[in-house]
Length: 112
Image (cartoon, rainbow, N blue to C red; front, side, top):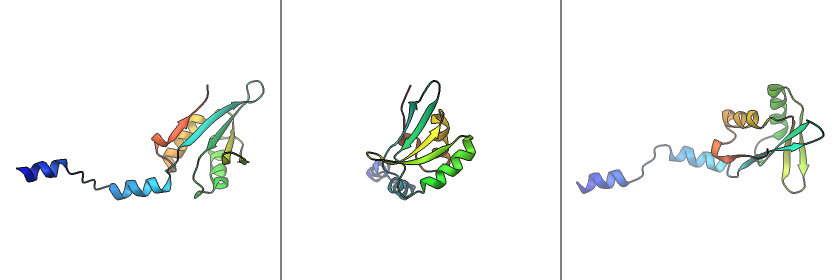
């Protein structure tokens, strides 16, 4: 009987090595912010994507997918930041999760 209780309380996760691999790939949070420009114009910034990924290639795919312009800017405090025209916060969050660059709990939405 005690063996059965020990088996129940033991945390044997068959996917533990997969989770560890994902955590190694992306540890930090990704911050998605919106900035007001002039009038109704807005700018979406994505900060915190791992340096393992090529931001220029991500920008190229996102620009085609969302039909907006974008660029990679070297910010003095945050490092390389992805900038997109318009309010793309929800779209970029869904994109990052669907491609596998981040988990939903790692993405923080800011603004408005």
